[in-house]
Length: 146
Image (tube, rainbow, N blue to C red; front, top):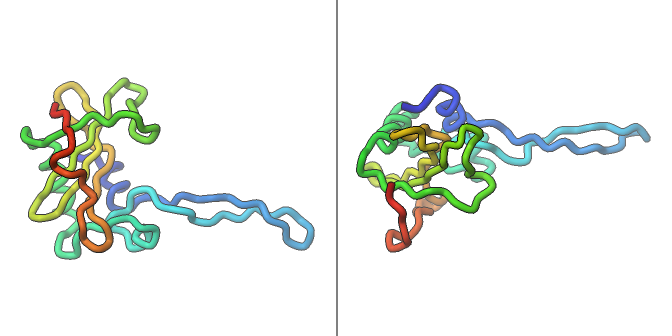
């Protein structure tokens, strides 16, 4: 259910490069450093930048299976993502939705575009802090089911 590019993004991710112009021997020099990471929830390099990692006891295939299960589950509690420059409707006009669903004790946040009557995955990640506590919104918070 998750295409190859989104799977690569979720698991491997991409470094966020930052170019800095400095001077070396009175000549301008452009250097590039990694200032963050996009995706990479099965990549130890991304973990150095605070990205939550899939549980050690799950394979990457297992994690992606659970993400697909969330996407296809009719009981998933989706909320429309609003007021965020990062999560916005794409050029096709698809609306962006988010959910946090638990699978075998692991909270998984899935961000998806709604396309017709289905959801196309944008990203997904384990939604817990480094200490294992959930980052999921309190269950009493308002939800708009779709």
